[in-house]
Length: 287
Image (tube, rainbow, N blue to C red):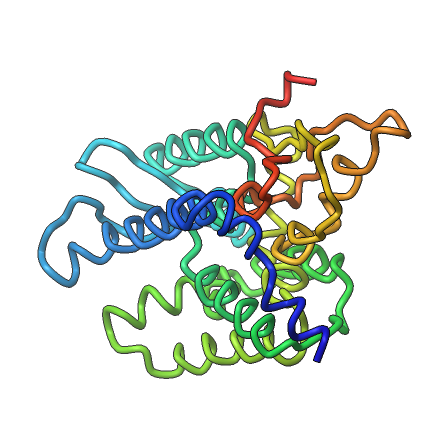
């Protein structure tokens, strides 16, 4: 019972001190970003408003700006399919963006499946469930390797047959069908089997972008870590809690306040949830 009460109390201090808007500021902005990006892609096929043509793998915005997913492009190359010049330009633009703002920003600010996994985490906290994952966090990197091995063997981008983001996009347009089963399975998996199991342990897309953003400039920093009162809310709410401790507790060991771990998704929830404003967005170039 105590565990359940503690879980339900997460964020209450921030709500009382900062108010609802500031306590959910970055979460609100993420939802606006995720839903807006999804709406732009769906506006054409559903309503004939072609601001963006294509999908999250490859698109053209306002007939001018090409954007291509470097992960999908790499799989295509591995399968023997070479992109046109527009596709290569799109990859360069996307790679440059994520090198700047952080690779796994895709996971928290773009990917619509993140809404599902965040909902699962909320349900799990409300139910007071404690579930440890049967999978190592390195499993996603093994799956990433598998998705790159299969294309030269099969001559096809095999991952796109199972990618829940692609399934969700196609399902909204053509009818969800078994895509509902995949989305529901991810939700139930995260609630009852593995805490943050899909995004944190299995998804090869997140693994790819974590490698891409290893040295990205935009980072979260525990710049006011001396104000920490050990409430533990940031560890509970963070989708990758292991990335917090070195920056938050490393002062005695000479570790700087910057969260330098590439698996940080720059979601900003630690900033929202902290009532003493320990965390903030910062630059890699700041100490």
